[in-house]
Amino acid sequence: MRTMYLWTMGFVAAAALSFCLPDFIVFRFTQAVIWSIALVGLVMLCGVSGQFSFAQAALFGIGGYGAAILGTHTPLSTYWGMALAPVLGFVAGYGLGRVAGPHNLWTQALVTYAFAIAFPQLLRWRPIEQWTGGVQGLYLDFPTPPTDMLSNDRWAFLMALSLLALGLWLTHNLIGSRVGRAMKAARDQDLAAAAQGIKVGQVRAMASGIAGAYLALAGCLSAYQFGFVGPMAYNFALSVQMLFGLVVGGMYSLGGAILGGLFLQFFPDVTAGLGKGLSALLYAVLLIAAIVAMPDGVAGALSRLAVRIKLRRP
Image 1 (cartoon, helix red, strand yellow):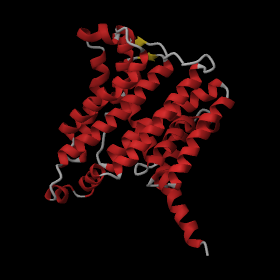
Image 2 (cartoon, rainbow, N blue to C red):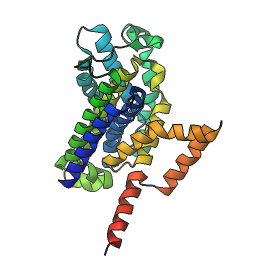
Image 3 (cartoon, one colour):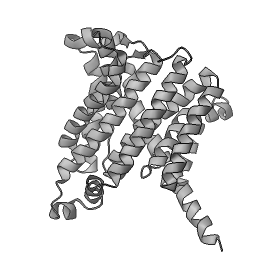
């Protein structure tokens, strides 16, 4: 109960603080929150169910393109994109999980890599480019704020923050449920889990579908924020970037998803200021050092530190 209270106070404080910051700062924190939503999905996929994926850029793009196509080619409100994106992401993720989930990590990596590479090409496929915009991509309008007192940037932050809070609550409950325990059992020892009656393939596909829903929702919010989707925005490098954020933040902790989102948004600025023309090299070196020093991510390191401090108390 105390932990829930602290989390609630933290989100309320973040929402209140957004009214004290200029729009361009709020814009950057919104992107960090969007990264965090995507990483919550990867925590479920990689940390809880023990799978591996390179498909996150494609699932991210499915959410963005779903919102863009709905807003461009239908008379529906752009807000419907936030309902459509998780559905599309879940369907795509579940289908991918049914194919890749029953196999080992190497096969999962290859299958999801193929999906990530094929997705940008699919968007440029001539029979459907009238819907996707082809190489030109699509522009979309930002959802109208409910009041003139809210700027687009502040409303985007409040929407993303609310969805992150809801996603963390749902995921926390799911991890503690029977389904979550089945995912962990399949992760730790799939043969023993199968012997206990757990349908490993189905459980992994469900985790993949849930991850796809979070990633697609994040992609939808990102598309709203930038007002544009294009094939080159969802390349393989984006998948690797998300994996970096997951590993540095901590793949076994929901708090790690938030830390990973902040890392992905703000750490490149730190290295750019220090690198003096070598920012990419410095970024890589510091990233490797962080992974070696903190194999469980920043969240794992903070958890161990908290345990040590507690043990030292008289």
